[in-house]
Length: 129
Image (cartoon, rainbow, N blue to C red):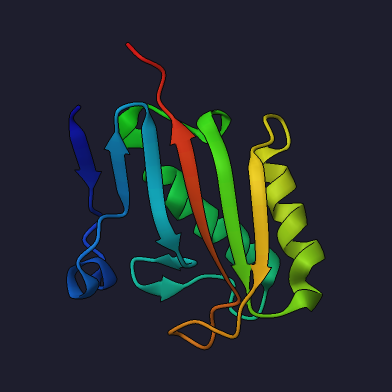
């Protein structure tokens, strides 16, 4: 089985030593993704916008494998506040409602950057060629 890795060049990937996405066989796993684009926080104070931005980065990591949101089997959403469940859920539904994945939503105590309200992960399925 071939393992392929996608790195985006983020400082977190280098400092911690991880890949944004790893494909092994027919599975593609995307690492925990914050709403940062080119190192700049998107949607500060807005859990809906942060969710859309974080999933945007995570979904972009699927494109080297020819995949998109319809190929996503599982999502995980980590929030710092239970009050943000509706906003995060609305963003998730807009992105994945046509082909809903299995989903997990968990409230956590915080992230490395205290301005971050949500972090996401996803797993996708790559059809055999």
